[in-house]
Image 1: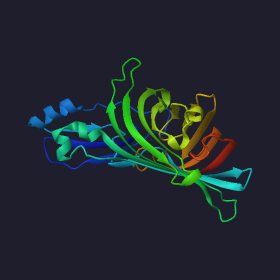
Image 2: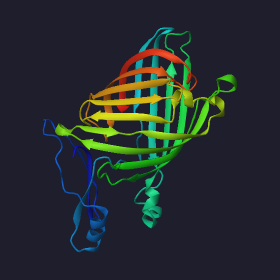
Image 3: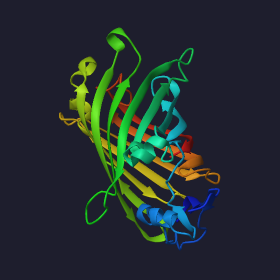
Image 4: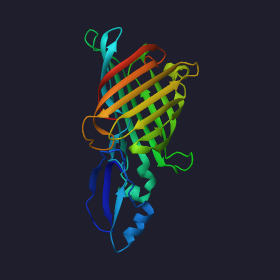
Length: 295
């Protein structure tokens, strides 16, 4: 294991231990014995306490969703510009809550919020060009991970709008399914494939958006949690218009929780729809650098 490891006793009252596990060589993370939910219930009914180790990624109620970053680059029209994003998810019902103990299914429900802004630093008065607000809710559950089956699943609803009125108003509502595959490689590296496949419930402010955005975000993530991480996203509309984004991040400090710390961040974007307002407009390739606190 590498990352945040949680350990606690079953059968008796005990504190929970949070351990930051990492590796400083090329061996990679080591396998450790864990106790699954079935064994934990057996242990609770036994006289002798056992230790239950939760895998890294068992995050607190409020945790990272998409990356949170601030990056600055050069815009051919106005000089310097910046892009920043805030994103988190919140587990609505803690696994230890009375409702979740009545039915563990409730603990898989999450609220999400992501806000992305483009800031024209080089223009007069440095206005914000556009901001996208994305509240949502999803239900997540574990897959089998056997053969070619996903390791995890998400299914949810999401609203996205830019908060404008009149001719500049843009908004969509989608329902989505997100299967997640993980492949563990040598030296602690992991390759993840996380496509987000969606259906437009409402797109009246931009009824041809599928021509530019399509119906899926194809997302790949590769690297080590204690080293370089590369995120790639590609989408293509039904009319052939496409866009892509590449994010590279490297830790500058020890992580606080899984995916959380301080990282130097390089971002490249090319194609259509960097903002919801510009969903049907192509821009020159944007190169920006800055920092991120989740990735």
